[in-house]
Length: 403
Image 1: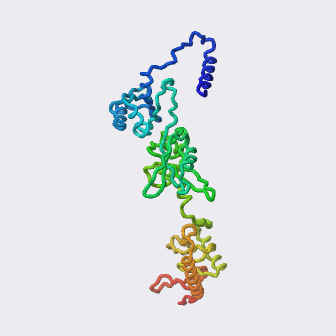
Image 2: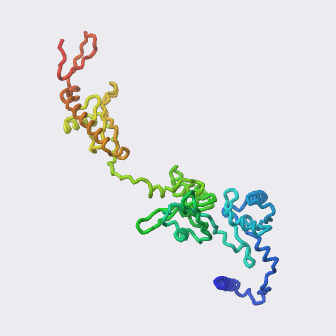
Image 3: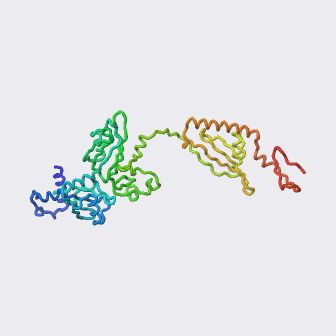
């Protein structure tokens, strides 16, 4: 009834389009009975269409498909570019080809449809194809055919369900033959609610042709994706995308969503972002060193460590004396511990505590031998003409000798 109503709607649209060009004399009635020979021929015929690239070498295509099907007696004809008809010698041979599908030619999906006596060859829907899908992650207590069917209904129309036994245990794995919409993205999995908790299950596809790692649709690669341009994808930056080879049953790896759900949970600690300081000038550096020494009571010698604002981070200050031409001082801060990369545990805490105690002792010892850099620079310098040295730089603790 649904087919008749659809046909009436199409006929009404045709009459409206033709208008006055259509008359009742243009309708031709034929016998309602189909000869038995034609029925048998249609029963042994399959129509096939290449989903993505229709222009192929017909001779190479027929040779490869006959070898793949192990059916040298099949007759192949090309109706139009990318559309073919296959006539088999027996119904068993035809059913074997349909059952062991889907088939591909050079990673190009070949969608096969059973010939129907009352349907023209160009009226078949080649946007749907049946695939075997494995469902992984169902707990043993819930591994039943009705549960598998409910999960498979999210993929498409169910054609067949097979419950397979693996190893020595009960039913632990199964697969479902589902008719997928080729214009939609492949589904990676589903969430199974068993009442007490929710679990993630992975979907893996048998004999899956090439598909896009960006949008997840069959028939093209990520570099040729029209929905998500390649320049805007993570693949252009050599990063992982939403889809990868783990969708195929030949790949044993699980999806990243499986790892995110069943993987080890780690506490995410918020760490302060350390912004490196820009290179300071001589005057700014001297003022910063002197101000930091006055506020913290720490004297900077050649090299020492000071505490940062974060208790889990240490910085090292180094004063570099340049040549006579480039006089000045610069501060270089180096991060030794970063809260994001180093986990917090008891051993780390003990090490940090010992380091802080050692720094404190070193600071107290250096305070006894403190030297003010500014006083050193302001001390008068006396040039000795008759001595072996051309210049003598004095320190505040020991003034220069007069001649």
